[in-house]
Amino acid sequence: MSAITLESSLATFSRRFDVSAKLTERGKEVVPGGYSRNSFNFGPHAIYVEGGDGAYISTVEGHRLLDLNNNFTVNVLGHNHPAVQRTLRQSIESGVSFGNPVALETELAQLLVDRIPSIERVQFSCSASESCMSAVRVARAFTGRTKIAKFEGGYHGFTDPLQVSWHPDHDGDCGPDDAPKAIPDSGGIPAEDIANVVVLTQNDREGTERILRAHASEIACLILELESASGGLVTLEQGYVESLRELTSELGIVLIFDETVTLRAGYQGMQGDYGVAPDLTVMGKIIGGGFPLGAVGGSTEIMSVLESGLVSISGTHHGHKIALAAGIATMRELTQGAFDRLNGTAKRVMDELNDWSNQRGSSFAVYGKGISHLAYGFMREPGLSIRTHRDYWRNFDGTGTQICSLELANRGFFPVARGDFSLSLPMTDDDITAFIETTKEIVSGIEG
Ligand SMILES: Cc1ncc(COP(=O)(O)O)c(C=O)c1O
Image (cartoon, rainbow, N blue to C red; front, top):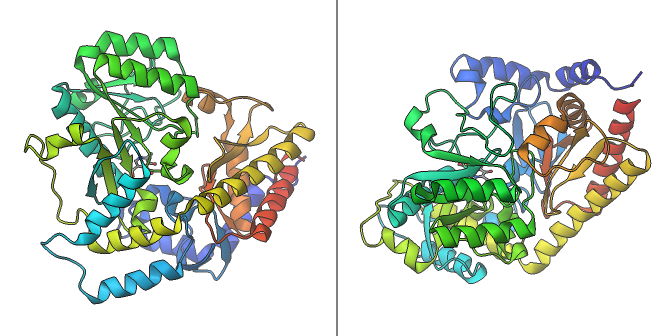
């Protein structure tokens, strides 16, 4: 019998995070569900935070947790980085909101253009959801076509046309493996939007080509994550991505890389690792330095639809001054050396935990491409590879992973509850050692 069970983890969690439970209940009196993001849920309720400093957060109960959630990958510099704080203080003193542009916008756009060869022009918004939508509109106007191709398991924000087949109901009729159905992830999404989505299976070369060719005259864009963030961390294979580039160019389909999370991979985002240039890139998370900022970037030719007046996109807070200031300060800290350190630490976590797990024949694994955003979890059997979203949902042991997440929180670590985590620069080698050793203890306790 295992020493750690769902019941024992939940009982400890409820004791340790009792104030959070009360705040959740209080929140429910005025906010549906208690808070405006249901991704805050961590088991029975969210963990309320008092503040953060460096690599740690403090909860309302006074517990100090190593922040492996980092606001779902945003806080690559951890909390209260001195350079960002300094910039913010200065920026706030000269006013925060204007009906005028600020030169910071050009500065951040230039920084991104200098780093990422596929980007010559950048347009900002307040979130990656908005910028994904902007990218789709640009692609539709540029091609004169309407349909959107995306992967099952791919997340591109919560807008109507894109929140389709992210986490389809696995027990329902999702269609054959090589021809998934378009299924809305929420009520309230119009049927016309769903009908405009063509769903593909990751790493399935034949199926992808067949479907894209069949709908080519109607498809405006293919939007994808090179490594799906919230759909189970499925990494696209090199040859497959190259084939997508060739095929979309041949068929006149705009290829959009959603690098909202994967921009963390390195100086040129994850597209730099693949050496494949998309037509448009969506960015978010780290580029706002902890403030709401999204962006879409691409070639002068394709982005010209925003200049010619063919496409109109506008938002009161788009390119917000404080978000730009924080974003510039953050991105400047992200030198090649900083990315090397983050990715080196990610490799250490993966190698140490997976070697240990393989030696004991455990079905626990850390997986991902090896950047500073990784996933962990129990699989139905040891050594399974996850090449598609269906591989993930068929093989993933949700209960084992849930126990692991609860137990990590109980012991001083705060990952994303569904089983993923990201690293920040202020994490020390000792922090990482503690995370690795605690994870081993938890996995041993669960497996008995
Ligand atoms: C790949 C990807 N695209 C888009 C989004 C939407 O970003 P936002 O929450 O900033 O709207 C997310 C959010 O997690 C994401 O992971």
